[in-house]
Figure 1 (cartoon, rainbow, N blue to C red):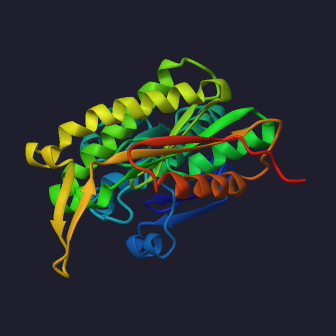
Figure 2: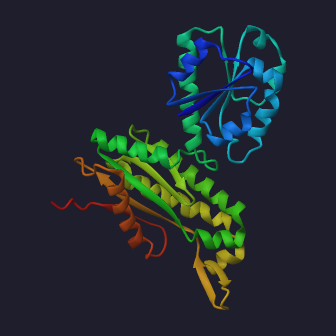
Figure 3: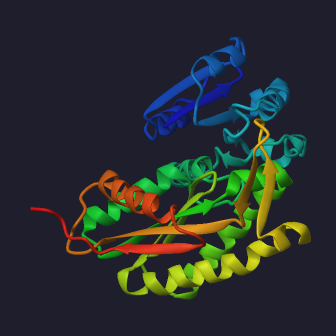
Length: 307
């Protein structure tokens, strides 16, 4: 991770050494420099602002970052001494957290580690469903493979999603994605087992992990709940038609069935997989077959590796 420390004139040697020891890349920027340009040139993962700088003009800089669509997500932490903490002027500035210079070295180090970990989690979190994103998914699956865990990995894909978006709008489509995320999460949580995980790859693709013995039950539960809930998102005319009837640009009439769900499951039994990409490729092959079928479906891959 890369961090920057913004100071008014010069940095406290103790604090800068502590921060520098925790990050792969660390830069100190003073108020005399072109702060905005320097940060935009090499975007950080964490911005720490010393109290003196914050009070002197940092409010405008914080506002600049918060309004930026590219860097608005970067966590901003205020570094405050005793006098700063007693002042109320900084409390209206939209920082995400604060550190006190009065804390011990070990306390500051622990706080910075927690802040950095939280920043990584939030950066990878899907903004719509609040589920872990692709980096967390790959890392979690690979860690389980490395540990030799017997697990089932299920890739979940929502079918006929684009025609729904075209007819009802993206806002309504987002509601389906949020509903799918809740359905999967609740079903996985209800089995109350260790080695479970739910992630949102992006768009209409999700993934969940569970012990192999529970995957069939979970697939059937997710499909049952999704097929029941999805009908609430269509109007009566489309429900009566059994789907969306639309005329393409070429004048041809097409009928798209109600949105369904496809679940492709691979099993890591006996250390079958050593790499995420292997499992993903097998799941892709299964999904290709399932999508040619009508309705919601799932398939558990029980093939053995070729020797």
